[in-house]
Amino acid sequence: MAHIYGNRVMLREYRESDYEHMRGWVNNPKIVDTLSDIFLYPHSEKDTRGYLDMAMSTNWKGFVIAFRDTEEYIGQIDFIKLDEKNGWGELGIVIGKEEYLGKGFGTEALQLIIDFAFSQLRLNRVELVCWSFNARARHVYEKVGFVQEGVRRKKRYRNGEFHDEICYGLLKEEWEARK
Ligand SMILES: CC(C)(COP(=O)(O)OP(=O)(O)OC[C@H]1O[C@@H](n2cnc3c(N)ncnc32)[C@H](O)[C@@H]1OP(=O)(O)O)[C@@H](O)C(=O)NCCC(=O)NCCS
Image (cartoon, helix red, strand yellow):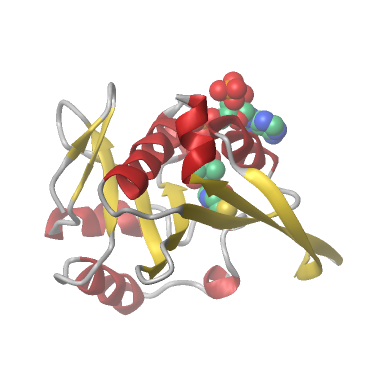
């Protein structure tokens, strides 16, 4: 996939030099607590290496979110599932530095990949899931146009309580109507 440019961020391929940036967040509870339980136990260098090797392979369907001007790593946005036959993809996103959270980079990256999904991949729907307690992510997803489609009740146990998983979807026609 070619680079995709927004106002402040770009979506680019994974690079060897991203390894240190990825190590910078994979064991940071402030980043990984709202991600999946694959981060329940510490991530080893081998885990990160394995992910980066996969992400640098030709079959990978995702991007590093980077600064448009310097191409420096900000985070990652990937299709964690892509069903080309039925025209849908499921996204995963992380901003990988605490100081970059809440600066608008996640919103811009999502808008770029959604546009790419509908105008280049010919998808008809993009979806993602999110824990009910992830208020920032939910706000961002709803702001860019995702519609809450369902709730998987009490799917995650965290800090002594069960929490719901919220399922979001966005159709191409809804995205085009918003533009
Ligand atoms: C979720 C995530 C991708 C969003 O990206 P981001 O760059 O931090 O978000 P943005 O700066 O684009 O937007 C943040 C928005 O949430 C709002 N917000 C921040 N904290 C909030 C809270 N606790 N409750 C509700 N809204 C909140 C901000 O005001 C802003 O909205 P606005 O633009 O309307 O003012 C990013 O925070 C992240 O990677 N978090 C850690 C990993 C994660 O949770 N990934 C998603 C898993 S489903």
